[in-house]
Amino acid sequence: MPTDQPISSKDEEALARHLASRGKLQTMPKCAIRSFDDFAVWYTPGVAAPSRAIAADRTLADDYTNRANTVAIVSDGSRVLGLGNIGPEAALPVMEGKALLFKYLGGVDAVPICVDCHGVDEIVATVRALAPSFGGINLEDIETPKCFRILEQLRSCLPIPVWHDDQQGSAAAVLAGLLNALRLVGKSISDVRIALVGVGAANTAIFRLLKARGANAGCIVACDSKGMLNRRRTDIERDAARLREKWQVCCETNREEVDGGIAEALRSADVCLAFSRSGPGVIPEHAIRGMAKDAIVFACANPAPEIEPELARKAGARIVATGRSDYANQVNNSLVFPGLFRGVLDTRARAVTDEMALAAAHALADYAEKQGISETSILPRTDDIGAAVAVAAAVARAAQSQGLAGIELSDEALRQSAERRIAESRRAHDALLSAGCFAAT
Image 1 (cartoon, rainbow, N blue to C red):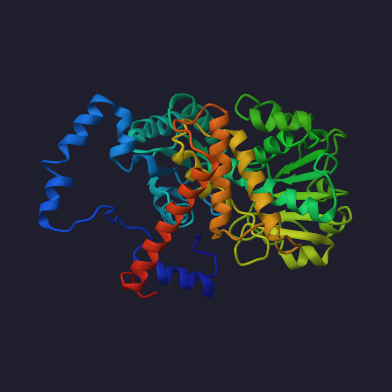
Image 2: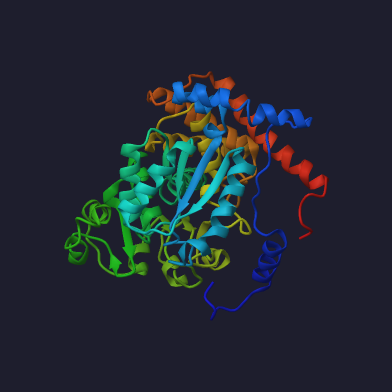
């Protein structure tokens, strides 16, 4: 955190608890040590047997090691939350937090890997070198546009799923929340006018997923720090080779070629999807007042939303969501990635696709609707095991239908496996807590 920022009571609590526990992760055995003799099985000489087997058939690493349940969380610290380019060391608490969510919410073991290299080719080479130890790769908090290039290259060269959570995870969570919000206000995704505030990794992927789900690209408008995107944005066109995703947004959206800033983008919009800079005050109240009746506002910047939810509601928004758990309607990628990786790992999928992200979004939205949705509860809580299981099963089915799964399982088997792995993770945590193994915080 920049030194000129005031320290709040919540900041002080976070600092104290992180200091007391010295971070959020540790390594624990998953095999039983009943006597000293067990070391001869789990290590030398017994360990040579699985090593020889894997040397003869490398795919057996998924059977004889924890590789098939282990994900690398890779970041260079160049775009961390709303803090910007704070470097790999400062990114480590965030990546540890991500690993905590992977384990507690999805039963997935995740390893934070914060790298001190920043070029596309360097990061790709580093991840390729590390890949044999992991069943999947989660890219995190890497600035645009290099995050797009890194994802493209790794997906093309690695035989394991590679996922950029700031893109695909955010997009799936937003789509799920939006589908339920539109159900509540009685509007269709194919008819609404949508304003994207911020055109970084999240909203770029959201735009792609919205189109895949039937949104009218011409009725979508996007606004970055310099104004609304359209074909007259020569600053983007001149750099289109590097910013090709952003130039595509310029070419496909804003059919009326409107100019202006946030207020103009939101004028008469049914939906505002904001992933820009941390607030408050990024989106002014008068911009919300200019939106259509029964407006939906997702203000998802971290750590502070672009507009305070209560102010957005007072200005006329009917449904307001943020990325934070301390406000109603949390729309956060933590609703997606634990269950999604549970599904791809359990089927040993070779890749993770936009079709799987769509499946995750639909599963999440449908699960919430069955549980009962309202204007202040459009999605489940992130710790709802049923939601994670629904996402895992849907993603696994999508992997199988696309021919990307290494293991074919029935829907019931997928659900049972996901529920068991997640429940085991939580029971292990609760046992350690009961035994007093955690620092007093």
